[in-house]
Figure (tube, one colour):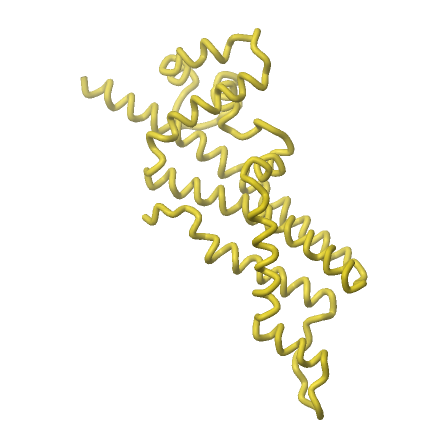
Length: 232
């Protein structure tokens, strides 16, 4: 499998952005089929450009720039509506509290194998944010051991894709409002709701994929340990 987990930027993400751009142009009455009736008018020429995909590709460049300016930390902040709320930040606490429902491992197995980690996690004298950072750091150490496993690569790619599509919806909305302001267009409420709906769906998908990846990393680590114990 291709280890370039962000190759979706050249395929799915670009197609998603251009498709939504064309929807925006259509909803703002700028998408028109070329009608050859006499001389070509300015609107007909605009329609020709749109149908050839030039305007969609042009606007995509600006959308991509806006998306690229937003750091991964800010993307995660927007997806989780807060800081240090990714699954890795609470994975060990969630396992202990029974919030992680995964048939591939048990709470007892996790607490036994990660006893050193749980000694720190169960220390209630530390601030919550400090514990969250500690949990994520320990989870990330485990993740690095399995990051090139196919199942981990797929889950990580799917998470990043869903996250970036969600953020692309936000970027598209920003571009739409800018275009509406510059060209004095009437805001299409249904279009705003549509983009908002896309963001909500993709946000939930990203959270689900991230949780699945966090669980799978733990499952892989515990599974490998169980095999080692069985082989002794």
